[in-house]
Image (cartoon, rainbow, N blue to C red; front, top):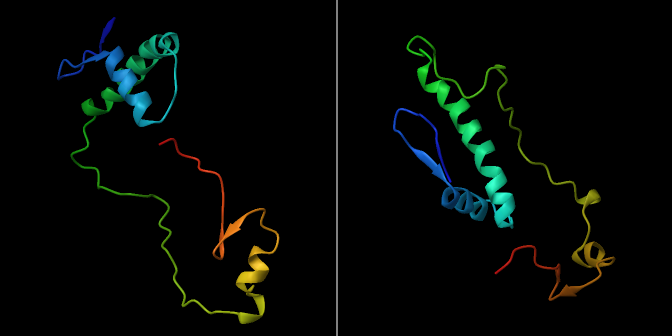
Length: 108
C-alpha cells in the first residue's frame, strides 16, 4: 500500500518508510500496527507540508518568542550540602568500584 502525499516533490510514503521510522524511534510495532499507522502519518505529513505554501518573506527568523534570555551565574560549591561518595552510595542496591550499577535500558 502506498500513500501519495501530493507534495511538490511527489514523494510517496510506503510501509517500508513507516518501518524505518519505527526503527529510528526504537518502537517495536507489529505489521498490523505499522499498516494502521501508515494513513495517519501520511495525513500528518500532508498537513505539515502546507507550511511550504506560506509566504514568510517578511517574517524575521526566531528560535523563541518570549524575549527571555538565559541568566548565568558562577557556580558556588556549598560543601555543607555535599555527600561523600560513601554516603551517596549507602542506599544503592548495587555498586561496583564506587559507582551505581543499574540495569541496561537499551537493547544491544
